[in-house]
Length: 619
Image (tube, rainbow, N blue to C red):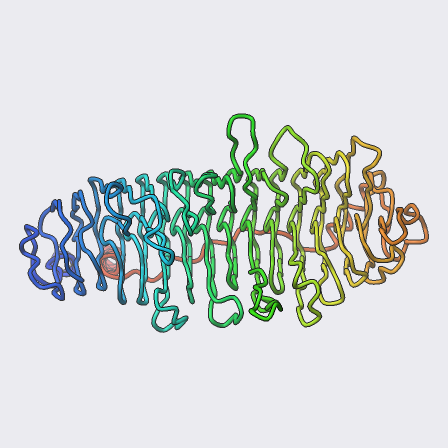
């Protein structure tokens, strides 16, 4: 027995020494004062807390391990950075607002090469210059970095809790800008993993000259940008941009832009990202995840629960437009020197298993639960759900408001005339349960509101469900598609289990709310169910006929079945899994470092304990 206990104690002692050995003595030279950092390419670890009152005018390419210490700043630590920094807390404050326009952050003004930022918490408020540097650059202001100008850069487990104010303001980074326009992903890419912001991100005092402002919970703006990845990022802080600065705002990033003509040259990916903060843009785009993804984009398992709106000035509604996940996606056509237009038919958007439950109030024409407005190529929305109230923001009625429970408005006047331009807006297994209120003369579609439409541009709705209420004063309303000008529109095997309420006799409530096409020509609308007495009166209002098509009756039985509430619910159940499902948490990763050692210790103790017990039994 004594021998067994001695072996047990020996194992514990060895394991404890192993833990001490792993956690002690970081690599490099110990730093007790800023003067100890003598080589900008060196490897260092902090042995004490530091204070930095003036920016070190070098490009740092080495490694700094904060080793759990803090740096108190009153200026950015470095002019340029292209190294690694980790395990650090930043306190103090940085204010460069009175200086000439430039980039600013707590760790570096700019990143100009490959860099890694890991496990850093910023508690220092940062205030940067409030106008552009020149016609090319916005002035970036970030919790850690003002602007990323080149390099493959990773931000992992970084947190900002402080207020960030600037022209292009972000909780972690103000601006990412490929200054050479190389569009080379091997030379320029930024990845944000498990980064969080709870600070107030504010671009409301910015001055617009050539470029508008931008405010994002994690990143302010990415311009001419080939590769952008957000994974597991969250914002809970207020993010806002005002009318004077005319800029977009997003819970994760305000604005992402690249060369729109070739899709493989640019892509933004958002996975498991969440916003619970209030997002306001008074004169541009406001979105729970992004204001405008003017680039090929993918959103997976993204959630917005925050209040997304345009704001007010007294009783006047301001002119922003709003989306629960993304306000705007895609890119507009651009006029060529010969007067023709190049259409962005490759700039596509994909959303999978996303949820908006936040209130969305728009001051401009468009609003949507997932997307308010899209120009460009295809949009594919799968298993997405809106449960938030989507409305026009104001007491004064406004004409031609477009409200979509899942998708709002699609349009590009030049692309509409291009028969080589294909843009299909698809909603597959999507759900709207939110209340939709346009006010004034508005068009509403519970799944898709508006697709201009021709043989190459049309809406597709399959296996979708609406259970929400539409309240329309005048205009056109549908539990499926509010407006489509092509008989190519597809609505299949979907269920309208909500209702449409109107306050004006000029409102038309139909399966296809409005169309320039022949109302009797929709042959791809099949197998759908609509609850009885939901408020729908017609199959379609057709402009070519100047009146609604006949009331729904047995003529349309193969296209739309009128069902009791119980049968409508049965039809919903028959669709199986539809809409957003919260991802199941994954198994914890294998323990490493100290955790791995303690796992070995626990296992050893358990085994030895079992041995002692067995020996005792034999005795």
